[in-house]
Image 1 (tube, rainbow, N blue to C red):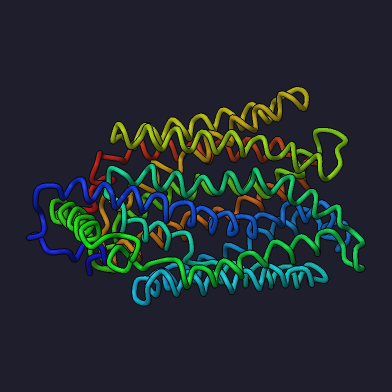
Image 2 (image 1 turned 45 degrees about the horizontal axis):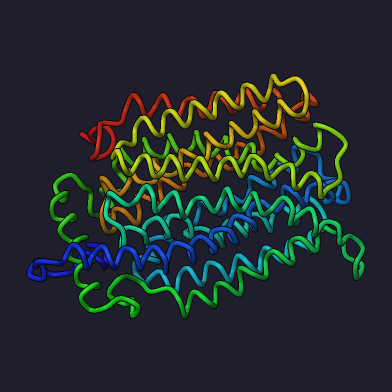
Length: 444
């Protein structure tokens, strides 16, 4: 099944079609990317605010490092279990309705986390939050293929994914300030945190129903000429590369390329969440800081990550090169983690963590431009979701591994070095397997 933007007839090609398509793409960048960016900020805040809540919650509820790491990671168990079915439903019912459903449900569950009483209820709500969020990220990546041709995807993906870095940038000061509401109306600061950061997701979910078109054909802000030209451009690219792509669900799920991409993404995600869920506590261990100060200090690595994501994404699109952009970013992340584990003093440690974040998050743009190079239609919906599911298994193991080693050694250094090995493995795998612009090594 071809994406909705790929159904335009070939007959509409005429002089000026390229200009009209470019005008449509320019409007799509302005209309869609900032909005999707805002949605992903809300998504990432609701996912990682637990890392800041832990500054108060772990002590109040008596959560040991392993218990907190397990609860943080259980999010990904629910997420992985529902990921592929959720993305297949999105393809059938449309992005607008399904993304709205995802956002409203995760916002409600995130706010409900304020009522946890101990480890067991914490585990249950984290599991439910993961199930509610499943399908959002791969759904957006799949949705972008309805709008942007290959030459634009790394940049579009990087701009969308920069939200994860900027969410971390915003999360630090915001969460630190909300934790300062401790005691107001008899609620702890961490309870205010979950409640207040869940509400925007619910509101945005209803906005999605009125704002987000399912594809170019439904975009009333495009002229008829622009709609037809953009769909024709995407349809032409689809036909030109059809022989190099998987199309059916079974082809997407059985593809060796998909599973290899999943392995690469696992190595990246186990590292990112191993760092992200523990970053506030890592910073806390660097000195004597208030929660608000921890929030501001924690923002620096995310600022570096945001800049690196955009720069690498633009460079990858301009050159058309994915392999070395991804691998070198992974190796920069490796170097930063090794240096942070061996740093002497808080300033050196913070600079090393910022270097690590820049490398880790910079992998996203080139990485997520790769799957659409060999997947189309239902295969893309299922294959992208499977890659994200395999990768997000790392979101379970990363925080748990860091918690286990912290409890065992009373230090984060061992965990940081193991995470460095993981992200280095991502760089090595892509260098050994990637074969150019049609994906990874052959499925045959």
